Every structure is written in structure tokens, then in C-alpha cells.
Length: 379
Image (tube, rainbow, N blue to C red):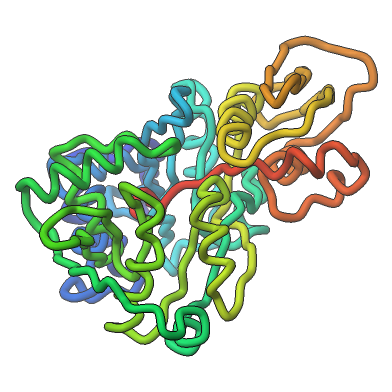
């Protein structure tokens, strides 16, 4: 029997056709209505170099495993953060238990750190990715709103019905939507020429909310990423949507405190969940960015806490000081540091539930921080 030649490393453009066939096969996609390039055009169009953004394993030139790593930049209150999203984790069913997923994940993490990534995000089974430093995090507020809720909350109040127009090509409406998006306090940096591919992720559609032809906001799919020029239009948007569709499951990031307040008043049910899995490589920087966002949107109690974080990338020591509601993160060791391992730290700073946080009263006033990535920017 001839020796099997194994390659482990980056994919190449020449592999693209085989690569798309391979990931479609592993995920049981038929290549027609279920197909990675159709599901996520922002990643899998040839011009976005999907295969080169993958770590692969081949046996005698045939793909046996692939893991995509897709880089996105975020702006959080003026701080730029780099998050490398993990997607299309695929191992051929006949090649499982060979450690190929482990090899690809380790290559990916090593290169992320070398490239200066601040964090990484993915969707998947918690323990499976916990081996690679990921932990569930990112508070998301979820509201169930239906026609009965609307009838009780707005009895005898006339509806200012808005128009919802699908936006599928460039033009004035898209320009206005991009302008609204780019004003968000926490957002992915979406290149204008890729904006439509991004918002069409996950087979979604982009809609403009109009009042007599005037753009008042936009949303994706079923009121996802709801963004308004004036939050006072929130009830008109929700009521107009429910008149057409009967109900909505509305999800909001924790930093959208005005919309959360409005949604809580009219919903039938509500809960808070973690949005997806994250690992943090630069805790001090990421914590500092989202502290500023929380201070600007919901406020912070004055106080001081010091931390020693034994992270996946490195050990970090820093102090958080809040004076007159303004946060400052100071590097260096200090007395009475709270020591956290990597998974504890992700949960402590960014998770909905953190047992460690329950033992530190002040931390319950500060955390979790409103780390969040909208669905259109997931990979």
C-alpha cells in the first residue's frame, strides 16, 4: 500500500470547487436551495477568497477537513477591534477521530494570535469549542410580541402605519440605510461594495421602513438588526410589522437600552440569553471598549476593581476605575486582584451567567458588558 500524503495548512484558490462541494456534502447541503455560496455570499463568492481563508487537511490531495476563519473589524465607541469568526467546521465522515478538527483549530488559533486578533467568535456546541478556549457570552434581550399584546397596549390608539420596502440593489434607500448603520455605537465595518452581500446572509432580506417615502429605519429579516433614525418610531414599526405578520420574536443587544425599555413595556414574554461563543485574546482592550459603551448607554457605578486574567494568549493584569460614571482601564498589577482563568474571565466580563461574579458585589453592577455581533456579521 502506498503511503498517504497528508497536507495540513491553508487552502488555495485552486481547491475552491472541491472545497465548496466538500463543505456542502459534510453539511448535507444539496448545492441548490441549500448551498454555502447562496447562504453566505459575503464569504463564499470567489472574489472573497473563501478557500484561502480556510485551514484544511488533505489526504493524497483530497479534502478531509476544513475550518474557515473570516476576519471582520468592529468599531465600538471609536475603538477598533478585530474578531476572527470561525465557520464551516467540516470533517469528512470517514475521517473523523483522526484529530483533523483539532489540528485545524489549533492552526487557526495560532495564526489569529500572530495576526493580532482581539477576539474570535463562533456558533456551536459549548463544550466542543470550550477545548479551544471559547465560552458562551454576549447578552441578548429577547421579546415575544404578538397581536394580543398590541391590542391591550394600544387600545383606541390610532396606528401610523409605515411601509416596508425590500432593498436589494444600490440606490438612495441603500445609501440611507448604510448611513444609519454607520452611526451605530457598536458595529461591524461593512465595506459599501459588500453591504448587500452581508445583509443577505442566512437567506435574509433587507427592508427599509418608510413614512410617506421618508426613511425612518431599516431591519433584516424579521425585525433583525432594527435600526431607527429616531427611536420614538419604534412602536409604529413594531405595530406595522405585527399587523402584517401577526407576531415577532425581537432580539436586541444589551447596549440598545432605549429599545429594550420600549420593548419590555409591550411584550408578552421576555428572556436574556448568550448570543454565541467567544474567546478573548486581549482582555484589557476588549473590556475597555465595552466599558465605554456601557457607560454611554446604561451608566456605571463608581468604584474600583483589579484583575489578573490567566488568558489563553497571555496573563493580563489591569485595574478598572470608574469615577463620576467614566471608566478607565489601567495596566499593571495591584493589591487585591481578582484572579480569573480564561473561561471564567469570558463569563465574568461578558456572560449572562457567571458564578464567580456573584461573589463580587460591585461586579454585578458593571457586568456583563454588552459584547454583541449582529447575525448578518456572523460566519
